[in-house]
Structure formats: structure tokens, C-alpha cells
Image 1: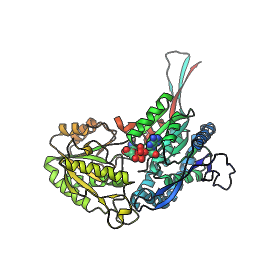
Image 2: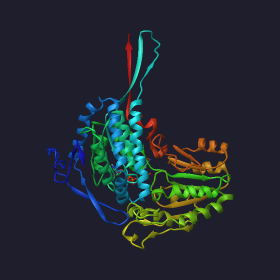
Image 3: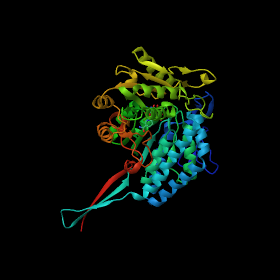
Image 4: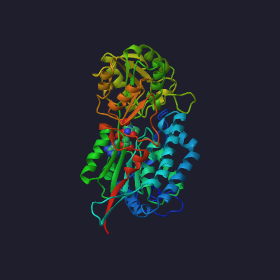
Length: 490
Ligand code: NAD
């Protein structure tokens, strides 16, 4: 853990040569970190105590006074330095991510770049937090409006994008002048530790960015939501946990940002090339082995192009190689743990029992050493109906469920029939239809003939049960700012 500029080891002391601070007390111990492809233990992280979380929050509170008084140019310089360090360490970060989280090395390299992009974007945005003056009805009055940092931020991040979900929160908070205590997912603390080493090297002063790791997150989450010094909680993870934390934070009137689950529809109309659409959807569906909040979870295909679409999709999915992401040509890494395998298996079994057709896959992979990890075969199911669990529940695994539809009106209604509202995809060559779909879909992110509508420069976030607030873009920094009005009599 990294608290107030000091790295802690499990002896209760620090592991940095220059520091002498032993006051943070003993941790209860370490918890192991495993490679989900091989089952091997690849490291361990400290299990925090409530006192350590408390001291991290206090360190962030102390640091806030001086950090919020720095100029935007100073904060920008630290972010830019961290960006450069990330690029320099890209191969090592990506390799660590593949070993800890499982995604293929090429995808890990892409994620490190995506993560670094947020540092660069907010190094620039830090300098563009403008105020305004507002005309008054009174001749002797002037209104002056500024944006000020909200204060200490508590952040909780998931394992599926273990580096970019950190920088997507750290960069705008730091640019705004906030300080932070971050708790990463228990499956991927090593990526978080590597990132905080970069923040240390980048020269962020002690207390500005603090890292607390833990095996059982509930107590840390509760302290984040109830501690008077924490002014904001930013969370990325599942909808049930997000709702729970928002409920805990509500009586304390803390600001919350919630990036939660999704159940993305992807609609393929008969005016597009079904082979091109199948290629695109096979890429986005199986990205990160389906463990992405923007992963398509219902693929709607218009009846007259269903046959060529399904043929191409099945052919491509059958050709995907599963295995250890460190090996070349592997497209499908492991799922994060056995619980994920069980969830995917249960949804597939339920769908087949209720009449779905299995076109390929449909079982855990247990040969050639894969039994040591958590692998599930890339799967295509057709004839999916609303009674099936997969039609409504987030799968977070390598399963493409396909539904056939007839008309635009019908498919718009079906696509919107979910309490989630994160991402949606449309394939059409008809301009008017693409605009009607963009306007009619109740989702925060719409990809039209585009499977990657994400960028540090673009607002990312969901509607309804997919969350509150946006990350990235010019909107992302507003989540860490308060509006402050001055009314001045002259
Ligand atoms: P999760 O909710 O189980 O865990 C996410 C984080 O919350 C982890 O750090 C975990 O330790 C922590 N956590 C869990 N229970 C907690 C509690 N009681 N108190 C405090 N913290 C707690 O989700 P997950 O399985 O790690 O991640 C997958 C989910 O995240 C999916 O639903 C996915 O859609 C979502 N996600 C959303 C986005 C987005 O931007 N909208 C991005 C990535 C992932």
C-alpha cells in the first residue's frame, strides 16, 4: 500500500529506504494474487486495517490544502510526467496485466495506451477549467463564477480494465486539484501497485495519491462512504455494489460517480453487409473474453440477413484460439475466476433448456493445461428469447446471444427493454435510420457502424442502472469540481 508517500509492507513499517514512519500499524497480512490462466500465485498484496484506511484519508485531507493551491500548470506537469513514464514502461505494464488479469498481450498493450491517454488528456484539460462572469440585473452588482475542487476523493476500481480504470479516475481528479485514496479490485492489486509506483516517480507530493489494497472490500467501502473528510466517491463495478455504496453515501451527502454494469444491444439491419457486421461484432463481443461493461449482450439481426450473419459469426468464433494471453495468436484469455465460469455456464444452460440453439462452444475448456485456469469456450447461441436469463442478465463472458427481428420499431422497443443503459451498437447503411436509432436508443454510448466508440476525449458513461456521471472528455473533470459563485457589490 502507498500512504502519504510511503510504501508499506506487511511488517507494519515502510518499505522505502528514505522514510522512517512506522506509525501506521500492522496489517493483518497479505492476500495472494493468482494468474487466472495458470492458477499460479504470482504475488501478494497487503490486507489493510481500518486504521490504515483512516490514515490514508487523513493524508489525502492534509495534502488537499497544498495540492488544491497548486497551479493548473504544476498539476499538468505531474500528469504529463506520469504519461511519459507509462509509455516508457508499456511492455512491462502490459505483461503484468496479462499475467494478473488474463487478457492477451496485444489487448493489454492497447489498454496501457488507453490508460495513458487519460493522463495526457487531463494534463491538457487541467489548464481549461474556466470560470465565467454573469450579467446582473443590478447595476452595482457583478457575478463571478469559478470551479473549485471538491476535496478528498475515494475511488474503487474493477479488475477487468485494471490500469485504465485507475487513470480514468486519477487523471481528472488530479487535474481538478483533488487528492485521492484508491482501492483497486482484489484480483488485480499488482497493476494498481505498478501504477502508483509511476505516480510516485512522476513527483506527486506525499498524500496526494494513496493506495489501499484489501481482500474483503466491504469495510473499506463503508469507511469511504461515511468518513467526513471524503467529499466524493467514484466507483466502477457492478450495479448491485454501486447501488449499495450510493445508499451508504447518501446520508452523508457525498457526491458519487457510478460507472456500472451494462447489457448492450447490437442491432444489425438488412441494409448493411452482414459479413462486415459479423466481423465487427465478433471483435467487440469477445474483447477481453466478454468481460467488458460495453460488451454486446443481445445481438439483434434482421430476419433476411440472419443466415449469412450467423454463418460468418459462427465461423469466426470457432476460429478463435483460447489460452494463456502470453502466447501469440491467443484471442480468448481466461475468465477471472471460477465464479465467472459458473455464471456463464448457468446462463448458457438456462438458454439451451429454454430452446436456444447452440451454434458453437457452450462448455468450460479443460484440456491442454486449461483446467488449471478459468477458460470457457467462445460460444454463439441463436433463437434467444426474453424468458432466458441471458436476455436480461449481464453475462461478462464469451457468449454471443443472437435474436432475430423483423421491423425497426420492434427492435428499438426490444433493445430498450432493459434497466441498463450503457452502450448500444447499430449496423445500417441508411443515414435516416442511423439517426432515428441514435435518438431512440436509451443508452449513453451509441456505436453506429463502429465497434469502438471510446476515447479519452469522448464522454463514457451510462443511463438508468448503468450509472451516474461521465468519465473522460471535458465532462470527466466536472465530476471533481464544484461551482462557486461570487456576488460582488461595487
Ligand atoms: P464488483 O462490483 O464486484 O467489484 C468492483 C469493485 O468494487 C472492486 O474493487 C471490488 O473490490 C469492490 N467492491 C465489491 N463489493 C464491495 C463493497 N461491498 N464495498 C466496497 N467495494 C466493493 O464488480 P467486478 O466484478 O469487479 O467488475 C465487473 C463489473 O464492473 C461489471 O458489472 C461491469 O459491467 C462493471 N464495469 C463497468 C464499467 C463502466 O465504466 N461502466 C467499466 C468496467 C466494469
